[in-house]
Image 1: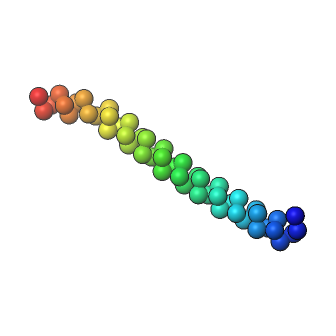
Image 2: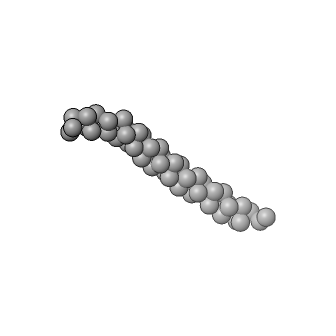
Image 3: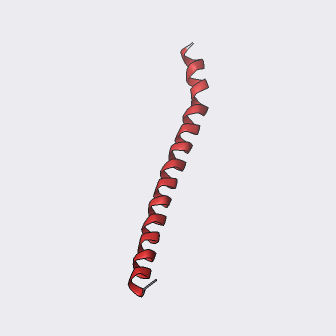
Length: 49
C-alpha cells in the first residue's frame, strides 16, 4: 500500500466507525424508548378498562 492509499484507508475506517457508532446509539435509544413504553403499556391498559 502506498502512503496516500494508506491515508485514504484510515480516513474511510474513521468515517465508518463514526457512522457505526451513530447507528448503534440510535438503536440503543430506540430500544430504551421501546422498553419504557412496553413497561408503561400494562398500566395504560389497566386504567382504560
